[in-house]
Amino acid sequence: MARDTLTGSRIRERRAIRGLRQADLARRVGISASYLNLIEHNRRRIGGKLLVDIAQVLGVEPSMLSEGAEAALIAALREAAVDAGTPLAETDRADEFAGRFPGWAEVLAWSHRRIASLERTVETLSDRLTHDPRLAASLHEVLSTAAAIRSTASILAETGELEPEWRDRFHRNLNEDSARLADSSKALVAYLDDSEAAQDTRGAPQEEVEAFMAAHGHFFPDLEEGRVAIGELIEAAPELTSRAARTVGQAVLAQYRADVALMPLAPFREAVARHGIDPLALAGVFAADLPAVFRRLAAMPPGVLPEEVGLVVCDASGSVLFRKALTGFALPRHGESCPLWPLFTALNRPLVPIRRRVSQLGRTAAQFDCFAVAWPLGRPGFDVDPVYHSIMLILPVADSAAPEVQPVGSSCRVCPREGCEARREPSILSDGF
Amino acid sequence: MGRQVLLIEDEANITEAIRFLLTRDGWQVDTHADGSDAVETVCRLSPDLVILDVMLPGKSGMDILRELREIDRLRDLPVLMLTARGQSRDRDMAERAGVSRFMTKPFSNTEVLDAVRDLYAQANSR
Image 1 (cartoon, rainbow over the protein chains, first blue to last red):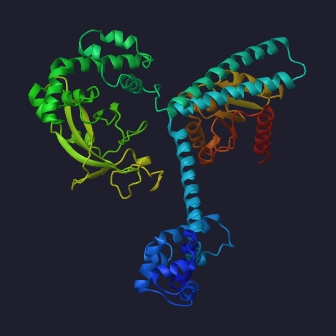
Image 2 (cartoon, chains in turn orange, yellow; image 1 turned 120 degrees about the vertical axis):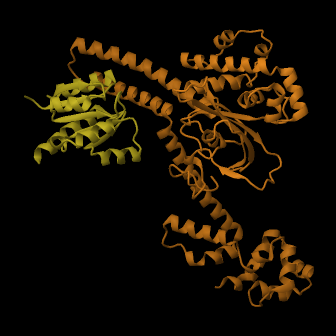
């Protein structure tokens, strides 16, 4: 049956969903119950004002009654039938089904979308296993130890005559491996727990330092006041477990202290109150360079800035050296970031401040103002190529009506944007995940 | 000389268990724990069969396998690959690299013994 001849059926279904009696609906739109009955049985065509009135009473768009369910719903039903691979499904009658049973059709389409979403989740977790070197190494450790235990235990259990020397050796191996399995299992569980809580402190030294900085809210009042030595803070930090992380942490805090000396908290707070988050104005007030101002802004305690800010620092290879996370702006944990970030654009134009309004594609598509600048480290020399770092301050945008917004991603693997010239590899995601 | 197996595995206790099993089964077992010179070791020892772990220090088992298959006389060498990851994509990757059989950890001793015997028999029936 053609879609537009089912308008009456859809009216009947919608009326039933709303719990309206035929007579009540007829009365409210000014027609007789018998006439409505004919309409509902598709024996009278309906359109114009009467259709609009009925749709209004039923709380739906007139097109929902005249054209049936949205094309997307019908497409979803057909897709579900194809994916199910059931030859008996009446795919050519999907529109009739959606028109007559819109509620059930929605349930079916929703279930199909949900299955697809869960499949993508499985794929993502599988991908994480592939690309998360720590997780892969931990699992390898656990499974290898389990393999050793299983083989050794089988030998002990199944070998009838085993020389005492071999038997003792295998007992010793079993003891060692069981202890190792206990340790590696605990480490794996702790890793997964921490990952769930987004508080992972293991991995690259930078990750430990970020966890350390985050644990302090990126603000060190005792260091601001000169009441504590950097070494004491580092020694007391449970997040800095490796020597490399402590070394990196030491350098970060030394930079922090230098920034404090140039821009002490009280005057900086006053300057921010006067100029807002205007990096150039603040740089002018303190005769500081922009990277220092960016870092200082990212180190403000709560209440100083009108909103939280994020910060990313990278070197000329694009390796991220430091991150201060900002809600809504995804910073990849492993692998390369989106090359469209102004952070990387700045590397092409050292010492030129860059400001871009960006929108990170994803579920929220929030907008951010990104201020970036790249600068050479150390003193210049005639025979030495400078080493550049780049820094980007990220501010959430409350008013998202800017005409020019640059779409960016987090990393290619989790970016759904199609036709991007900067894409390095296919995305594992599709829209809506 | 008896049938010779080269076991390339960096987990000492797995190595010890498999060596014990295969030795009891009449195999001559050589072991190697480093991926970086594993290909040279295979060339030098010319074993009848190789048991190869995927995750090795120095070079991955997948890379070692690919390199072995590029050497004419080792193109048909039976290689039993051991891995902690049994995902289909790893299996596919190993098959593309020319693996003879793929076994996920933890495995049973019987599985290892059966696989080694089968692979050897297949190679010698050609």
